[in-house]
Amino acid sequence: MNRSMTLLLIAVALAGYGLYAASYVPALLAGPVVPVLLIGFVLQAVFGLAAAFGTWRPRWWAAGAAILLGVCIAGTWLFEAFILGIVAYLSALAVAAVALIATLVIAAYLDRAGAKIAA
Image: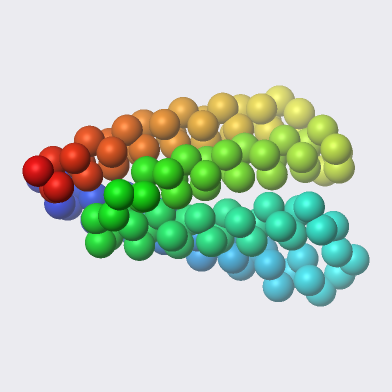
């Protein structure tokens, strides 16, 4: 698989996750609002779509947006587990760990791809 196809697949996956996170926002606004949870999902949607755009149109900040997305995913899951108690602790820790590992792998790939595109 060539580099441009991989970058396109990463961009589509990031955009898909951004839209997935954005789909939670209307439901969070319908009931009693937990501001931190709403902010977490809004930030996930914004950083997911920004990272997708930065990956699709190679930008120097795409890796940073992907890292911020991973941090927001991990933070939201840990907040849901340890503060709100609405998800199980071990599954939240597993999702946070997988999100951070996947984020670091994607960010490293985007950083390396960005350096080769700029050269």
